[in-house]
Length: 142
Figure (cartoon, rainbow, N blue to C red):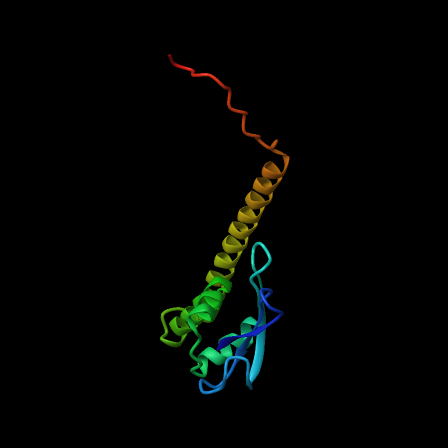
């Protein structure tokens, strides 16, 4: 799994794709599983969680950036939980319950972070611009 760059110069937009390791970065790919736009604040990530999970189970190796994206979206955590089900540590219902709890907490954190960012932008927008004071002629401490 890797990122395939699109967009114009200095305006990147990426497709998250499954591709052969020997294929060039923007070359032939097997399947598109999502998009990543780093220009928005916060970055916009759209990912088909089930397809990504299927490819991870088949042995696909994500690049470092894609691994971070999958971790952020919870795909790697879900894979970890399903491995626990396979080993018999707990059943699938428990795994899905754990994932749902994590997902709700994660979404709340993201919403809180976005709200704080929005407030900070509003505060910065409404602050008056400080202009430097002109220097006065004549010594101050004589």
